[in-house]
Image (cartoon, rainbow, N blue to C red; front, side):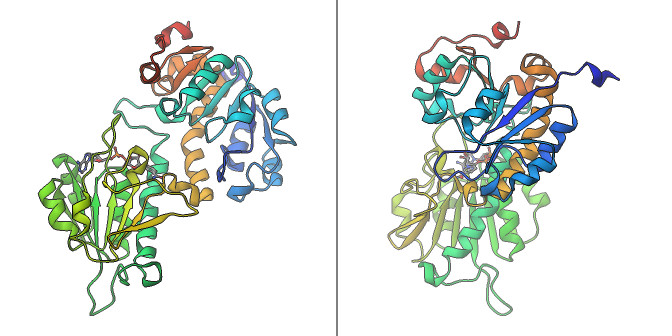
Length: 379
Ligand SMILES: NC(=O)c1ccc[n+]([C@@H]2O[C@H](COP(=O)([O-])OP(=O)(O)OC[C@H]3O[C@@H](n4cnc5c(N)ncnc54)[C@H](O)[C@@H]3O)[C@@H](O)[C@H]2O)c1
């Protein structure tokens, strides 16, 4: 009965227009959940195409298909996206419109200033934060990148790609390849599980002994744990075939744990996968690359440093992302952004800019803007 008091919302899902972005903010399954609750859902034609979802699938789920991005923005109260809005979208965003997407404001002063001017409500996936400081809308992408790092490592280890010509798991009578993972968080754990499953000889390092104890408990026997320090890294890189950089120190650039001089001690054809590239990388020689040209070689060591790894597997990434965002979208639609944010502390932390006011301290500090406490906009 209580459901009768819930609001309904007009929700729009535009097609992503950023270069090489094939993800979409909602799957047909998510669309069905929102429509079932009485919301009106508008999806731009072709929005799901890059992730393998046809317009008809959204129609069957109860959504209406709109032909242009302009129609989606002018119709919807809440826009659900994946990437931050880019130039052609700026003018389409209306005052008071709720935009639920990845923004990464601190890395773009221009976007921050534009969104302040547009006076919309910017709810950023990346800053939705639980009490234990975990980031529920970033975790799925770390899971994808972590698992994918081992696919890529295995591929570039092949001779044709310049690698050592080793099979990760070896075969009976031939030793498996050695995989070193530096950082035992989400990315590192998923990488270790994949490498272990393929039969590699895996070592995972972290600076947290508590984390290493946990990993030691849950990992199979072919995963060993080791304290991360310069001495141990220097020793291990000499014998490793694939090395995954997966460290994160929140809010700062990743430390250079693998230095240039260490490359000379590695075997020719060793593969470095620096997943932490989006935080500056944990390998001194890391330079960000794209899926078009993912690798480069220094001192006969292959570097794979793609900054948006999940972009290569948009279908998996879309489903993983919407699994995580949907429950928040349902709350926002049912209660309106204000009530939903008042009642859910994690969601409230996602508010970055509200009707021209910067309510996320990190964004205000990044560009010397006035910071407003979020309570000011929730009254
Ligand atoms: N390239 C991509 O496409 C992509 C995708 C997703 C995530 N990422 C990045 O991957 C990195 C890891 O993300 P995560 O979600 O696993 O973070 P996380 O916070 O879950 O884990 C980071 C781990 O690094 C450990 N650590 C910190 N300093 C260390 C050190 N000196 N040596 C060893 N370990 C250390 C921490 O203790 C923690 O366990 C981040 O930079 C993230 O932005 C990149």
